[in-house]
Amino acid sequence: MKTAVQVTMYLNESDQWHHRPLHAEILQFLRSENVAGASAFHAVAGFNGRNHVHTSGLVDAGGNLPVVIIFVDFEEHVARVLPHIREMAPHRLIVRENVVIEQGNLD
Image 1 (spheres, one colour):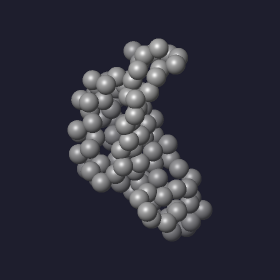
Image 2: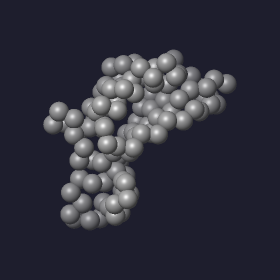
Image 3: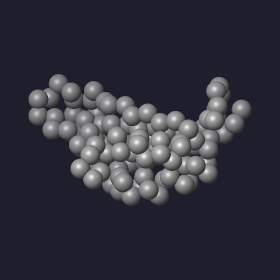
């Protein structure tokens, strides 16, 4: 078994980076940096911060549904990309945790 780092980011679907969806731009950046794996998940309901709950059933959701990005790689790769990720999403929650690779590999 190997240890790695998993990063979870909590965004809103309305978040932008250079007038493009932030979650898509982060995924493109992670791919360009050769990060082992990343996924973005669009929530059907949730909240960020201490705001009220937004659901996909609200007509006036206005782009406030959560988008979660999770990526995993070895420590040295995560340490290399995190400064730019923090710049791209300066006010969003980013959680980092050490994980154990139970199966598969990051190559």
